[in-house]
Image 1 (cartoon, rainbow, N blue to C red):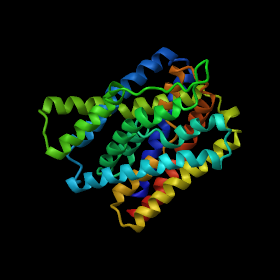
Image 2 (cartoon, rainbow, N blue to C red):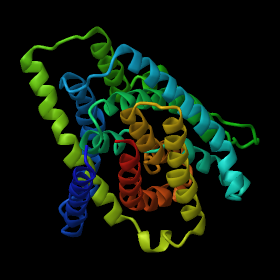
Image 3 (cartoon, rainbow, N blue to C red):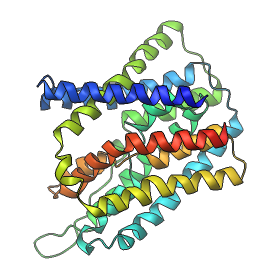
Image 4 (cartoon, helix red, strand yellow):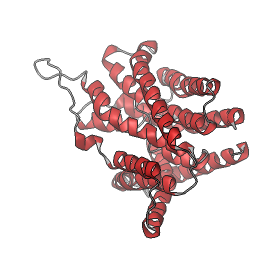
Length: 317
């Protein structure tokens, strides 16, 4: 894929985000509307996009590539879990707030934002690696992530109150569809045209809806105040620029496939995800840090992701 095409596609994404900002400014999208659309995107459209990408016939990856993707996904999250404990200390975060920065470091927006961008700007084979990373995300968040979130909670007697994981939470629509898509890929299963076309039509709605929602959320946030936080900018520099750059350089030296390298770069570069904040809200935690980080990193990510993909595409493709 040429640099001009990548730049055009990122330009399209920025326009879709701008549409969301416009809708919010016009008062078209209220809280209930965006909540319902978010549910549709997360539970229906995004999972459909995953399966549609596998069924498209554009992926030429092999079984060996899938195994490599699993190894890369495991390695990425092993590094991020370790970095989740280290980065809050580097940024000198107060001890009672470190668990939030830990979650911000490990659990970024690999699905809601990562999948549509990968579909729009990366080579076809890259989606396989993106799917695998999202499987690891779900498995880890509802185990390790909930344990980290619950590590700072205590009852009236000062005893720790952990947030419990459940099989039902792990097996959400996104995880189920990702695992199903990998099975379809592995066993080369073909769906009847009526089902395949339906999945394709539903999946195609993901990019517009997710980017428009992103714009709506940016428009609602108080970016002017939040953007003055120096610690957020340090987080962006280290987690959203340095980490993906190191990932790419290591994979380049090790001669990994360019599609795999760009996919892992994107997965390492996406902004803070919504799921930690949603879970924190459920248990009555103060979500100020998480919501501020989501707003600022999401707005900035349009520039950082574009710059990283353009720079490393020139190196790899």
